[in-house]
Image (cartoon, rainbow, N blue to C red; front, side, top):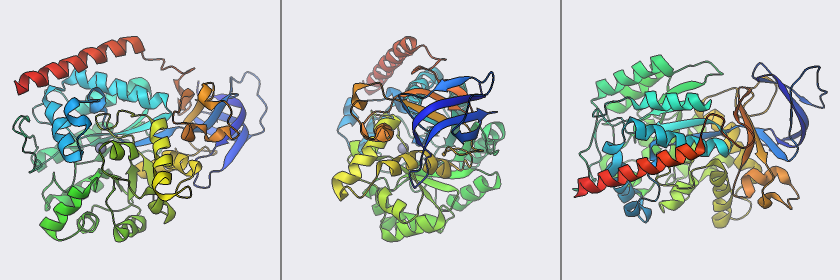
Length: 459
Ligand code: ZN
């Protein structure tokens, strides 16, 4: 079903920065938005009634770690800040994540974001340990294809470990030599990176952090290698003060200007977090079109702070929304992510710091611009029919004077139907390809296995 007509749209949002609304009907032809407005049904045309929903572009999640979906509420990490949490959560468990565990974890994470409105996901998989006997990229692309979601793999990895990880119970650090890292990225890109504007699969080159996990001389080499094959650059940056202290101490510069000198800013670069950026760094990001994946909830959960997404946006910068990994954000869905972005800035900076329509723009067009997809992120003629219809049937949506804002301001966004390129991915609130009860049982089993293996390793 890639040709159909959505009728009775009372609350439609285009996804643009102005918060433009539309109503009436939306026609999909060949997986594209063909017409919007007061449209009559054509003979034989299939119809989807939008009554009781809010219609938006499919949401774009620009930073996730699907391998963490079975690492929620790890006791040693639940009250830890970022630097300790990294050791107690992902780096304590990585050797035990086998192919099947990653598969189940990816299914859990993808189900969560799909049911809350995402139609495009960027997964930053930073655990490319040479010790693995499977290819995480293969598992992730495979699972994304089963769900029908548009998927960008930000291929992570390290050429060196972080020096301050000094917990003796941790598994040994893993790293790949630079040449092997780049060769692997090129091989994977040949297989999965589709540069076309309606691509279902793409890749980016994405070391875990450019500051801690590559040698400085490798930074321009990696940037050039990525650009040579048309990949964007992604990574974590300035998630907390540790990043800033480190580059100031080691290199005498703050992170953004230091990376800029090594080719790591520009319109093909986006960073997750950017909590600790000063005014000059913000200005540089705006000027160069370097985008932010705003991960409000993980930053809150880890006590890292609040990224100045509102200021970046106000200056014309590109802001998007990422749920980040569920190991540091148990509420790893798009509705919670949007609500927290909406509420957090207001709590600290007043009601004029963020509008609901702006947050939706970050989660749609902002995400598309961040990932470099020119034909998703807004509902306009000629764009891909990546569409979310948010369900208003839950009591939390009763009594709304302006129902269009519901997906952002009620704290939970539930999708009734969604489409990727006109193909249904959520149907009547369910994922057609998924047996949820079976996934729950598998998730329980794999989580128990992770707990047992880690306990056995600690002794
Ligand atoms: Zn992250």
